[in-house]
Amino acid sequence: EQPLQCAAARVAHHGVRAATQARQPLQLAPESLLGEVYRVVRTLGQGAMGAVYEVERTTDHQRLAAKILSTEQDRPALVRFAREAQLLAKVVHPNLIQIVDVDVTSGGTLFLVMELVTGTTLRELRSRYGELSWVLPILQQVAAALAAVHERGIVHRDVKPAKGTIEQNPKEPFRDGAKVLQVRGFGAERPVG
Image (tube, rainbow, N blue to C red):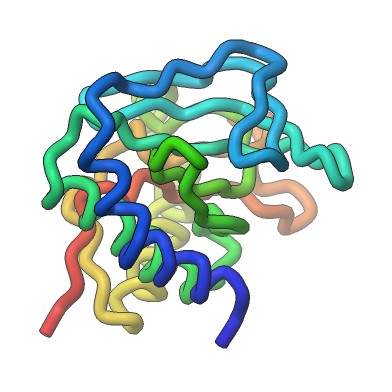
């Protein structure tokens, strides 16, 4: 079994119990350490389920994103978060953000670390939706990403433009066949079957 899958199983088994005992949500300041390996650079976003931080792995200085579930969540929410990590760690596709680590802090807070993707969200580019030559290749990539997760028995129940990011110049996103779109935010997934 791959180390990431073992870590996800450990989080699902041990981390959920520890995290349900915590009462305060984890707030990370820049330069603080997460899981003894990731140095926080900045907050990327916060929502009802938790927060996402840009982090730097101390071993190789690679910039990544860390998703931390609020410890104010109930046990089912924590179990869903751990399951998300387990399921998505198994899916590798050029249009999906890759999960690189899953762990639990010494205080019992679950987190997953994923590839950091910067760019423009499809929501920010909604003025281009009517341009078929622009939107059709993007829809093909969204479909390919969703097909990859469906093959693993996962349904993304929260597909929306804010969950897709174009990594290149949005005016000319298809030059040189480079990666264009990454689908993220599988917090509302569910296994099929």
